[in-house]
Image (cartoon, rainbow, N blue to C red; front, side, top):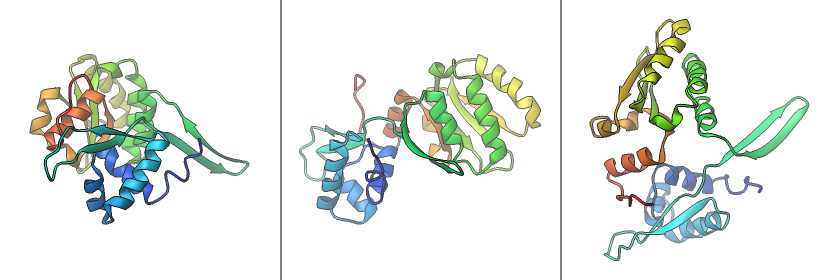
Length: 211
């Protein structure tokens, strides 16, 4: 499927908003400073392309959204243009591969290189990881890891040796979300359970466990 037309502005701005949390047409219109009718029209096109999905909230009170839109599936759309090669392609990637691609958006190349190597080393353990964030506000950046897998600390200690130990690892449990302001961190990986709980902590709608 050719995604260029769906990933262009203003649809791209809509997708960025609902990638952060499920949102109603009213919420999206407020953030994009446009009309609800225009947003609804764009959402219908995105829904028809199966890029977003709609969920009825069951709310009928005035001022409460009846429909929330969210990303229906992960989309990785790679464009590569070099001498002798030009191509665009939708890719189906594993979780650790998508996380590696996410590190490429980091400004700190030293941190990006380490994270790429670390993610490859823990790809078989990623099922036991709830989330990975990066705090690069300080001179020595930190990797925020949510997991109860004790082996991950050992893997990190082994991988960090050739990086002068300038990158720190902070390990937390899922219940620690309430004590951290994750909005200041850069997300690298989030499990579906973690994403839902994080949305709830931000004041979003509570998800059903079987959703």
